[in-house]
Length: 231
Image 1 (tube, rainbow, N blue to C red):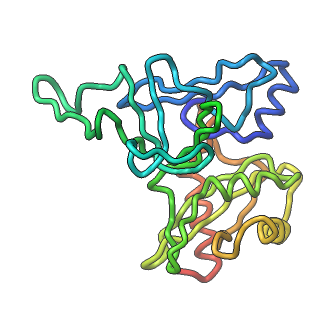
Image 2 (image 1 turned 90 degrees about the vertical axis):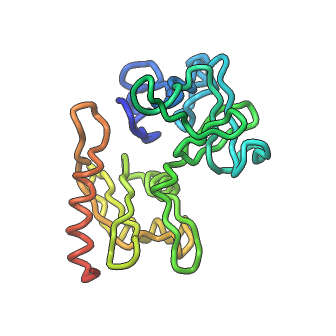
């Protein structure tokens, strides 16, 4: 699987079937390979993509010169010897925007006390409500995947008139109902974080690589949004 989040339940199923853990890795075009979970097999965790590779530094915060405390989510900053020299074609290269040698990744992440990197989602996926709350789709996906009948979830923001709304498509081979999911989320997320659209599927649509087909999920959820009477 390349280029997408893998649910903890899928990682557990893989390890149960094949006897080896799924190891997380992380990289970006501008900075090359960034982190890898190279811990001994018993210590591998699905929630992390591991620690920074040799020569690479990571920090979290609004400004890399004032990093957040361990465990606090925020923008990911990367300093890597593998960083590309610029955008375009030589000799006309536009250098990447950096701050004191740190490049701002498009991701929200956390670093634990041991330096493990945990990705929470992309900045451009975060939705601000009319009341000013910030909603991270990754938080909703993790909450719904805690339901015993859900194996994986896709959470996206849909355009609805002048606003963006959160929509959820949950993979449930057992066929969980949307009312069950809404009740589950009501007990685990604040009211302003509840998705407006909730749909289920026996299997999520996937690309040949195995990652979730985000565009196909959006089309399914758009139909759900239209059916809810919201436009």
